[in-house]
Every structure is written in structure tokens, then in C-alpha cells.
Length: 217
Image 1: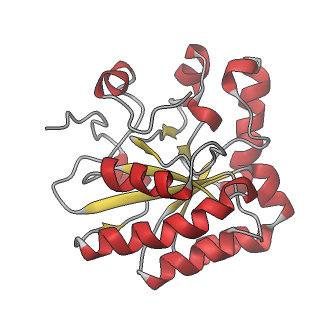
Image 2: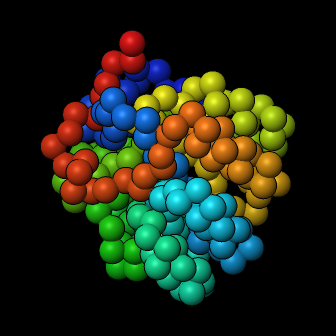
């Protein structure tokens, strides 16, 4: 069970998390979780380059260690990177100390202040500790590309119908999501490009001090 659009009341319960970026400009923040991997990430980079789009890649440390050349491609293309733990740990099922060490293990590789918890799951003490050291990036639109129960067309509809100015949108540069991503990502880029949107990476300096919760009109 997951929500395509994170409700405002949930966002308001966790105001220190970043759910979207306040703006009146036509800007979207595309994010990609679980890579980098050679089978998918370079293809994503090609799609983004065609639209001069910048994105944010939340990297699993083990994948960075296995595929440093792909991780370097992401950075050399001007995209932002973030920490997604070393082993894609679920905070709800992890001891705090184990979880913190896993995050730090990844941090040594990605060297980023941005952190996204796998599955969006953190225990309260984990959140309290991590937000002292990282900007915890969540999302307001979940594409559902990881979900085998929905079609690529539904995934596309999820993004087109729910994304708004400043939205943080989640995709996955993973083998599990690749079949849907091949259909959906080019169409999302083209659709919002035609509407005059630009695609920007998340910038930790710009995010500092901003109130992440914005009430949607």
C-alpha cells in the first residue's frame, strides 16, 4: 500500500522533512532511487540529457562501490547525488545503531548532505538523529514504477496528474522498474517540457532554511 500523492496532513506531521520545494516557477525535481547500475542508470542519463534536465540520484552505497564508473557518470553529467543507505535498509526493521552505521558507510562514498530513507521509513529516534546531519528528502509524488501490479500507462498518469510546481517526483533506476521507466520517463520529460517546465536537481544549499511544507491551493 502506498500513496501516489503524499497528503498535506502527512507532510505537516513531519515539517523537518523536505517533501517539495516552494516555488512559483515551473520546476520539477525528478529523483531516482536505488542505483547506480550499468543496466539502467546510463540510459536515464541519456534521457535527461536530451532535455537538458538535471535530477537527483539517491544511491545505494553497495551499488556505488560495485559500479563507481556509473556513479562518476552521474556526477560528471551535473546531477546531484544523495545517500540511500549502503544496503537499502528499512528503518522500521533495523536497530538504530546498525542503521546509523549503514548510512555513514554510504556517506563515505557519496559525500552528500541529502538523505532519503529506503521505503520512506524511519523510526522517530532515527529521524531525530539523522536530521542533525542530513537533509531528509521525501517526496510528494510517487510514480509507482516499482509496482508490478500497475501498468506503465498508470505510472505515467500518476506523475502527469499529480506533479505540480516544485514537486519532488520519485522514479527508480533499477532493473525492477526499468520496463516501466523506458515507457514513462521520456513521456514525462516531453509532457512537462511542452508545458514550459524545467527540471532541476535538489541543491542542499538552497534547501537550507526553507519550510518544506507548502499548502497546495
